[in-house]
Length: 143
Image (cartoon, rainbow, N blue to C red):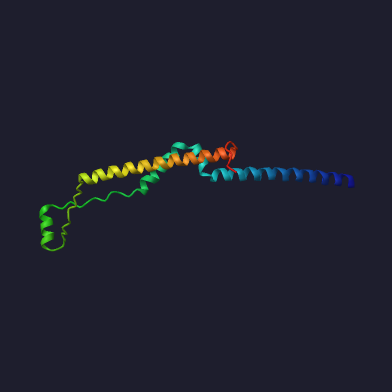
């Protein structure tokens, strides 16, 4: 009788070990699936057109609507000015006058900036190539 009892305990232990392995595999699989389903890139890969439509809809909702400007006819405007509900503030009209001297000065400044950039670019290239040759041991330093 004790032999049957020990066999059933052994069978039970084997079955429990097998179930623990299955549960462990199920937990790993469920965890991987949960990570995949919570990743937004999964949905973009699986449903690219739906994702593009969703992004377009969100962009459409985020952009504010253009406010309609009130259209006032001349008679209503005159009435509002007469009742002093509208204040008209005159502004100076700024005119940008370019003189010949200003245009030539701008050209000279641009040319000077371009020449300076060219000079420094060549200077940096020369210094960099000398440093590389020095580190490679091709140029001997004076003793």
